Length: 96
Image (cartoon, rainbow, N blue to C red; front, side, top):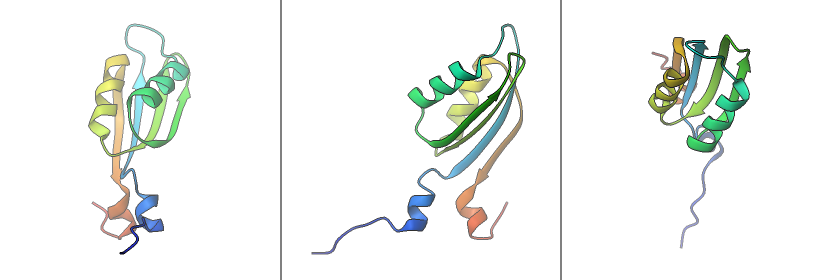
């Protein structure tokens, strides 16, 4: 008759990977609002920030599937300065 609950630390890391990417303009202008809307509609995660202009957009997103975000971002422009950090390892002091 136990009650299952998510403890605060587990809930904090519901989305494990802090994913950060810069997208550079390829063939057409970038639109951070369109990119943000697409990510929100198609990928599970939280803490989304998409900021920039028609030439460069920075993405910050917490997700459990960072490779999907990378694949999408690569479809809209050239990606670089890619950082994917495991927040659970960081919180445990096991960075790496």
